[in-house]
View (cartoon, rainbow, N blue to C red):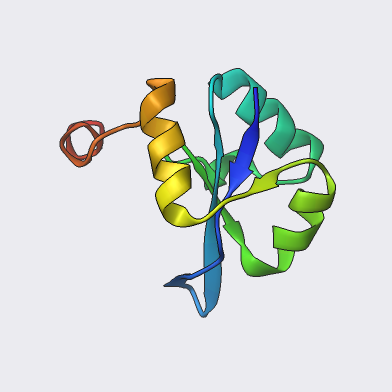
Amino acid sequence: MTILIDDPRWPAHDRLWAHLVSDSDLEELHEFAAANGIPRRGFDLDHYDVPEESHARLIAAGAVHVDGHELVRRLIASGLRVTARERRGAR
């Protein structure tokens, strides 16, 4: 079980954001996020959006830095990926 984080390159709310995911278990992801001060409101069905200023701290806490393509590949392989179609239906 691994927590993964990509590069903070997604702009919103005047800052850049990264994605934080688990490669196997959402409960593991929620526990890691809570232990590191990431609010539950940052969870978006299969990942947390985390601000750029938290990036280095989350890596120091054990998240493994990967590029965006690797993050998505591992999320799909885990079976946890929520597709765009599923995402639209969940809202």
